[in-house]
Amino acid sequence: MKISKLQNIIKAAKGERDLDLLLHGGQIVNVTTGTVEKRDIMVFGGRIVGVIDPNDSKPYQDTAKEVIDVSGAYLTPGFIESHVHIESSMLTPSEFARGVLPRGTTTVICGPHEIANVMGIDGIRFMVQDAKRVPLDIYFALPSCVPATEMETSGARLTSKELKTLIDEPWVIGMGEVMNYPGVINGDDDLLKKIELAKEAGKTVDGHAPLVSGKDLIAYISAGIGSDHESSLFSEGVEKLENGMFLMIREGSHAKNLETLLPCINEKNFHSATFVADDITPGDIIRRGHIDYFLKKAVAQGLDPIIAVTMATQSPANYFGLTEIGVLAPSKIADIVVLEDLTDFKVKMVFKNGKLAAKQNQAIFESHTKKPTLKLSMNVKFSGIESIAIKWEDRPARVIKIIEDQILTDEIQVKLKSKDGFAISDTENDFLKLVVFERHKATGNVGVGFVNGFGLKDGAIASSVGHDSHNIIVVGVTDDDIYLAAKRVAELKGGQVIVKDGKVISELQLEIAGLMSGLHLKKVDSMVEENLKASRKIGCLIDSPFMTLSFLPLPVIPKLRITDKGLVDVTKFQIAPLYL
Image (cartoon, rainbow, N blue to C red; front, side, top):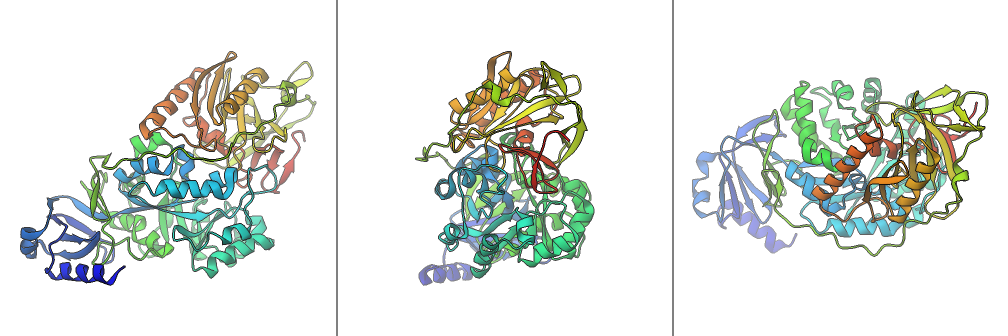
């Protein structure tokens, strides 16, 4: 900060310069003292220059450029989203901001892991540039695992050498989730170089260690990894807290762990935890909410509201070293949320850098995504419908079983239904064919398996969003519909497609890297809803079928997955045959 600006801030604090803004009559949540206090907030130059008793604010009210009466409301620091993949919302960063900032989120830590797996550094830079278009602070955690494993084909490869060129950028918060936990535990050279790169730069290293415990967990943490967002069991959360990890409690659109993990939190350890979305849909942002919803749910389960607010503000600010936010205090950036109460957490107004950015759930800023000049991200070699045929064998096959509200999967073993010597979908028992088509290098790779839990009676659902490498993934009843759906996704240059009786009945184009749409938030949401309705027409039983589908190729989450190279037994971290 320039000395002249700092001098003016000091003068404003002393009453020698007119304030830009005075918020009068509200009750602030003081996360430092753990109290609620009736105070007025003085703002100048985008900074808080005083938090004072309202009885002492009259002189400032008379001279301030703007005075806003917030009597009866509660004022908190801006909420911090500590771990989210913006690409999974299918929105660009600027449109994502239009959704979450009115919900009180003023700072976001984004892992551009998805677009990096498709387009490498070019994809990351697109995200950074688009984020600059809006008044939401978006920091980026460099993708540590591109590709996540060698058991899939990705569109890019980022080594420690490439990441070194970015680590000192001001928008880089640290090294993103290190999901190749076997690589860490076994001392993989380049992976450890990435971790050291962040540590030497004084930046965080985030973790990803689902169900890792005991000596393996200790070894993983010993590498310098500070957080985890993958805990799904109470005992898992406790063990990670006990070993010094910053616990990110996830409550996304698909993986919902808040109810299970909240009992891990008490009045002594809450500074070591926060709430995150990880992956969230446009519909959930609009109708459910973001961090405001997590706070509402946590308080409804008995968490003290001041502790909840602290976990969404000061705790992550401290973890990430963001010393200028997270607290309503002099010198801090004026990121302020005005709430109706501390139970429903309904947001009335949001101030970003001391300026009104949202009111009554509406953003007060424009965001126009500039059409990116990115390379083609859809390069598929289709080898004919026979490439997805599976010969039937008279022995049990491995089938992926979906677990409701989790990204974990299970494995069941059944004899598949057959026709003319080939294994086919069994709609009566809900064993559906699942296919992954490689879409980056035209290898012609096709992974074929079966999944239980979708409930389709006919048709197919296809998407170019398939964590982490984002090849085309399709679940369906007949090979004809599966193949048609995959080809339509490729024609769209990325997207989500639903097919019934040989016809496309609904679709959403995701032309930016096959992951995001350039359309506005509400338009994307309406098209997502149309896809959801179409999925019901073919019998889908899942609330978020595309989100569920997107996680099935993720070969770093137990137990059974599928990639373009085949089924993956994640517990053994190796490709597994279909038949036992």
